[in-house]
Each structure stands twice: as C-alpha cells, then as structure tokens.
Length: 104
Image 1 (spheres, rainbow, N blue to C red):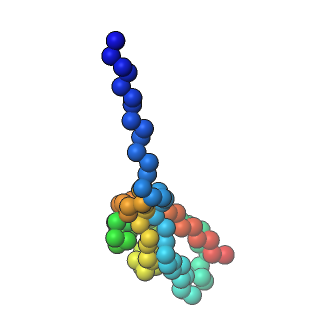
Image 2 (cartoon, rainbow, N blue to C red):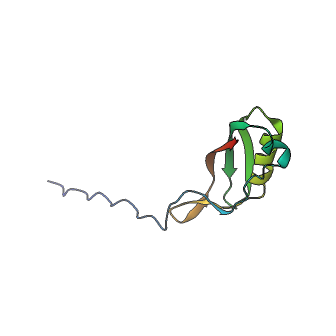
C-alpha cells in the first residue's frame, strides 16, 4: 500500500496583523456661532486608508448642518494614518467613525 502523503502545515504569518490606526488626530473645533445654539447631532464618515497611509474621507450620514459636516471633514483631512497590516505587510482598509456633538 502507498504511504500516506503528509499534509503541509499552513504557512506561518510573516508578521503582525492589525487595523489601521491614526498616527495624528485633529478634533473638530466648534465655532462660537454654533456654541450659542443648542445642538445635538452626529456625523458618520468612512475613511479608506491605503497601503502607503494616504486616505480618503467620505461623509456617510450628514448631521443636517452643513457647517458641522464641513468641520468634521476638514478635521479628518488633517489626520495621519498608519496603514492596516496583514501578516506584516501594509494593506488597504476602511474605518467607520461616528462623531457625536452635544452643545447645550
């Protein structure tokens, strides 16, 4: 009878796998004109982070206030990203965020 053929062990990852993470964050600054009004809202955004750390920000859910939406997008465009890693190599990834605002 032929000898059984051994099954090769799965290849071990060459390095760590982890989600993309911000290397530098800028918080949206609420101007005095908006602080005077009562406001409770949120903005949802999608950030696509490329292998080289470059990224693109897309508004997913508007706050209903164009000024608030612009503040969030402008702040996010100043962020810097460390790309996600898969087996030690940078990979493209997507991060979803929800920014909540409550001004009383």
